Image 1 (cartoon, one colour):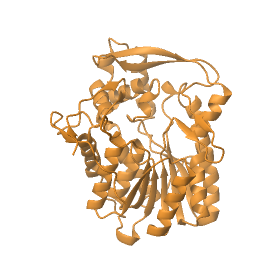
Image 2: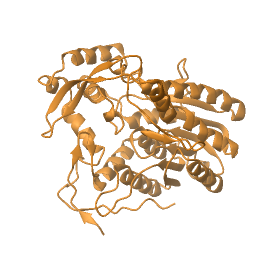
Image 3: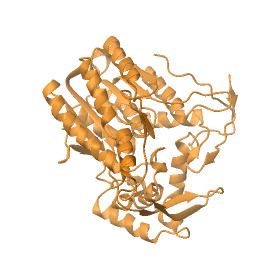
Image 4: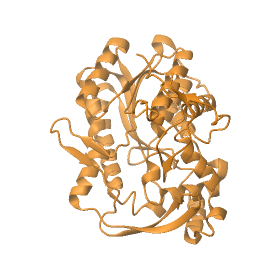
Length: 402
């Protein structure tokens, strides 16, 4: 037993510890928010799914909604740190344990692997499990956000960069001081060079997704009608200089090109489909690291309030399309668009008005900062309603057994 009281300690948007009970409650709440789907299937007839990046953000939403709405069985892959004597486990460690317990209670056969999704060793381990336990794979969701990737063929490690392309970018961003007071600042980011662009594409583009599909296809594990979706984001013109038109955007363009190539290949191979799923804005551990995104998301919430569509609701829509409950509809670039609620002209105009007038003095009137602060803290299991943070909690939670 290693019970202790955990208080939040953070450096900006990064927290040093996670709260197991808070992480568990958030996963339970997400599960309860998901409506059971009309095409739910259980037992050996349930769809077999692989969710790569299943412990956080939209990948977590994909795993939870797939289990709760569709009744999937299969495998989730993530890369998390175990608890130690000095530190708690990462938030994703506890979220995975909670997801596995809910799956067990619901009678879903869902296995969770902890390791480097970029490695060929993990691909082989997953393929072996699919072959031994399930016999086929119906769906693959790819949702990996990582700062670096080691190419398993060459051993070269690539590092991504958050930079504009072609010129210096000046953008407004939101930070909080040590007392939690908001500060709106302008930050300047120098442009990326060609090597930084190439390295970001190598990390965040479609190369690893394609390797996963190729590996599983080579093992003859893809079911007839197999579908795969890589999760992505386009975002607002307000953040385009640093995001969609920057190094990350170059990687996202590569991801979309990969989707089109995979779609043609899978259509011939097994009557399958490959798409990118463009999701809307959300507070995630990866998005808070991008300059301007915190300010934009807080202002968006100020405009939309409860009309923002949660990751769970968006992924429910995606599962409906992947499983045939609804038609799989894509735009001209082969993308499923789950972000239309965010990018309407009316919403973007309202956010732009607030963006232009936002200062340190006015930001509390323009953005929903209470919601944003709570959302950031909840990424680590804090500020979760119903949790007694003064009570000791068990931190030595085991990884789910297979």
